[in-house]
Image (cartoon, rainbow, N blue to C red; front, side, top):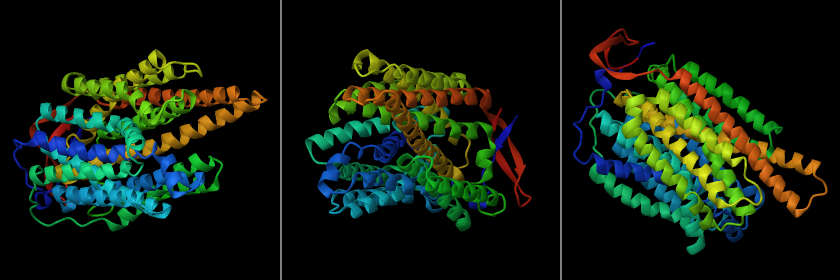
Length: 510
């Protein structure tokens, strides 16, 4: 099967620029912005008890501090990616940084729970603008294959490790400063990234007419993604039997189906179907989603385990994940610089999925009396090796061969896959774990402190088993669906445009 990725017509193309001599500094700026967006999904988790005591909100309301961010972030990612294509990457990147910083300041200074939730929702809005633009800048800056591999190795490592870094940073800031600094820290990062982007990110000039925004498609996909994320978040809180959960998930399915149908008919689609027509690219998005399901499960349940069962402090909890981060970074660099160019995603992504599955299976052996080394350390390092193998290879493949005009949307799809996967993983695995705990307590009456601790560990193990199953399915999918090899075309090919013209095709996937 041969898939051809064709660029847009010259009338709407963005003028190419030669590789910048400062592109590695550009990578540092983009990576810093990506880290800020990713770690913000977990950095406030450890600060929640302190924020709750300060602002006086209930246990039932606590989850909205996390959900408000994920709802706006997940539902607006495709719009953010398309806006970066239409308005210019540098401009959109800078606006995203400023908006994210202002929202973080508002949240850090929040006098009431309502203001905090509004600030978290605004963070999600500007994060949805910033995240796909960061990936688009990376995609269009690094065009030399070897350099591109190194850049995506760094970017993929941050995407995989950002959650764990957020746990560590959240623990340090909460214990040594104040819970509000979990939000204020974004201002520090944003200022550095803004100055760097102003000086380093090139402003590419667009020639010809600017394409229009697909407003109906934007409404359909944003509402559909909102329903999807909210449905899974509500299932985590109220259970899978809740009519609200199923109602929003059903509405999401209808809206997203209508969106997919509409994209084949409009002249300026929000999500050009050619992006998903390439089998390698579609498989890469699915791999990112599956990896996110398992990754968020590890962060969630290992955090619960070491804090509630083993009694670790917030800082100790964050430090427990450091070896995993280190292994993830090493695996990402080794994979993108040596292994992926040689073997391709068809080999490397299944290998990463298998490693991650093995780490999950090792975690199922944890008990109430387990120790950090080797019971937790070894599984986390195996998981780190797996995630470091999956993410860079998948993210690089997901944006490979995408025309510059669609780089923002392609980057948005990577982030959307990760966000939706995280929402599914958190809701589904948490529900399965809670059900397992209830069943355990029912069959081990009367309930004592020891029985309760054993029930919790049993619930975590259930989640790990399911996580291992997801990674196993991901390994099979990647091994079957990825094509064997991707190479540049020796000669430019052409394909018909909807208007009847022709376009050059710079890459052929074999």
